[in-house]
Amino acid sequence: MAVRMIPGFTGKRLASTGLVMATFYLGNAAAACRILPLLVPISWIEGVAWIAAGTRLFFASSGAFGLAAVSCLGINLWRTARGSSSS
Image (cartoon, rainbow, N blue to C red):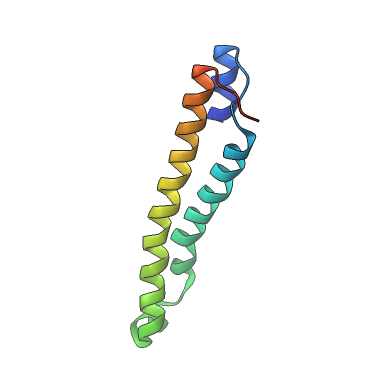
């Protein structure tokens, strides 16, 4: 919603639609990596070592994806507020 509100409030054009798409996909990847391990039965996680390692990897990568999504959003909003447009 921020990518629609900030340009509307400032009266400027959105700096990059590509960064909007990156924010969308990275944010959804972060959410999926956070939720999918919760769908695995706990008996599988406790019984099989590679599944436990995989769930930890998913949770860890969700943080990296989330940070990348917030960074893309921040860069896009900063460039929009400054008025520089590249797309």
